[in-house]
Length: 158
Length: 158
DNA sequence: GTCTAATTGAAAATGAATTTCAATTTCCTT
DNA sequence: AAGGAAATTGAAATTCATTTTCAATTAGAC
Ligand SMILES: [Mn+2]
Ligand SMILES: [Mn+2]
Ligand SMILES: [Zn+2]
Ligand SMILES: [Zn+2]
Image (cartoon, rainbow over all chains, first blue to last red; front, side, top):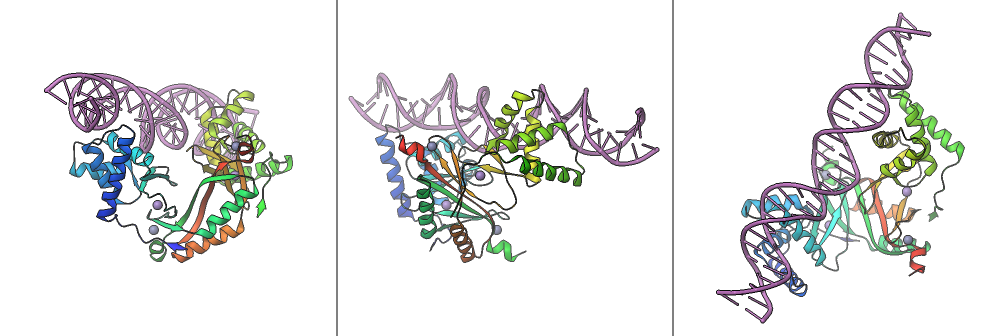
């Protein structure tokens, strides 16, 4: 099993690279590069966590009070379409976004006490999932797997 | 892997048994048995599928036009609390309910074309999930696993 | 610089889930 | 079998995240 460490915001070079990718995407689609999109993307990539539009908006507001919630919301949708972010909905039913590169599929452990989110990847499980699908003649395109419980910290403080 | 066939509504005896269980639950909690709760529970158990409150309400309305949506909604919550139903939220973000006995945990294959839902249970995967959790010092209480893709029928008709 | 189409932000709309409240019903007590 | 307290019901109102609308602004092609 490949263990993901805690997500730290990405390095400056990866951020620059991703922002280039966004620019290409925009040009390609006849969309425009704007100050807002640029700032929102930067902040989003820097945070690097699973954030809601609301959370990201509050963060951005501190520095740029002229950027509206709607634009943050729309930019996250855009990042999603461009492949730079994924939408995730966990048990609290809020839509969160996280930066994503094409390759790094992973699943989540979610603490029901403190809300912390840990990422993991387990190829054995992935293979078994494919096998299950096959047995039903089902062609799986994606999956969702989340484990809910108490994280190490919360378990120990109990 | 234990394969679940298509859910057919449950047998009359199991339904009766579950309705008894509901009655005990109500009495135990100081709640009341009512005509509405009885009819809603019956219909729900008979349908036996993953239904939304809205869907169940529409079904019930056909026979009993005096039963309101709110009561259906509240009764499903009640069935959930009493352990007779589980709440499930799939990718469409609607809350669905399905009859559940204490023992039969299972996960789902969901067709992104026709919406059909297939149930499966795979102990190997379950064990691996526990192992993943352990590696993180995480105490898993529950999990959610859904595979999205094309069911056999939709795949073949493509 | 001009022009057109895209973008922005505030406000309004949507829609599922939940709550409120007055009228009704259950069922425990006499 | 009444009486009465407490729970239930159904319609309507509310909540809350998400999404859409629209008039004003802006990007960027020419
Ligand atoms: Mn993640
Ligand atoms: Mn199921
Ligand atoms: Zn925790
Ligand atoms: Zn299908």
